[in-house]
Length: 277
Image 1 (cartoon, helix red, strand yellow):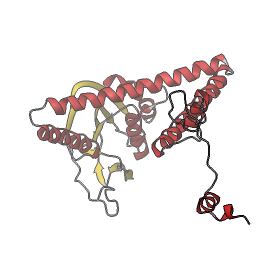
Image 2 (cartoon, one colour):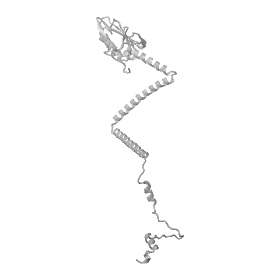
Image 3 (tube, helix red, strand yellow):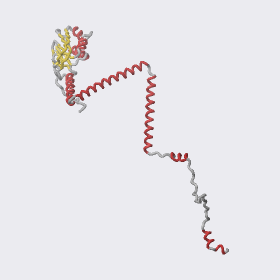
Image 4 (cartoon, one colour):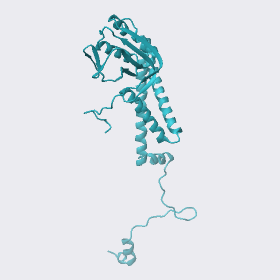
């Protein structure tokens, strides 16, 4: 080893790394290392991928998918119904149209009735009083049908003279049934009110109505439309002809005012109760 290798300058240079040459620009300033160039397409790709979806955006997407699926199902259902109608016969289409018209008319009538009742309640100065009046009127109507309330109105009077004693209970019952079928709303026979549960039996040479014995002449006082009641009794083979065959005399008179004032006591049912209780 030479003495030159032992000099301090040589040892210091040996321990330091090699110097990196620094390039200088024309004005003498040091240049920095060049950075990679990013194109516009690369920035666009970096912005949209990977996708960044928030929770709100995910919920909106699911709702839109459900709405679209529902609309597609509805359109398909309407299309199926239209195909079925297109394949129907003309008379079937006419029948369906008539049924729809009838249903529409019934609904329209019901709507008008409800609107009228609503208007009456709204126009009344005291709605509670109007409701009470309607309740009382309904109670009267039900009382007429049950025989607990007197009634008056147009109708007929039918008188049966039975001098031979040949008229029996079933003949009078046929007369009552015929009158009911013709629209009778209240019937009274010799002071006995006829109701839904009325029964007639033979009692010797007379007749009993609900256990009340009645004698000839049998007088029916009936409230209803006279133009319907009288023809129903005089049809061929009907009530009048049957009684006349038994040598009874039947007289039917129309009247604008028939009073049915025989009453029945209100009876409390033994077992039936209102379903509202």
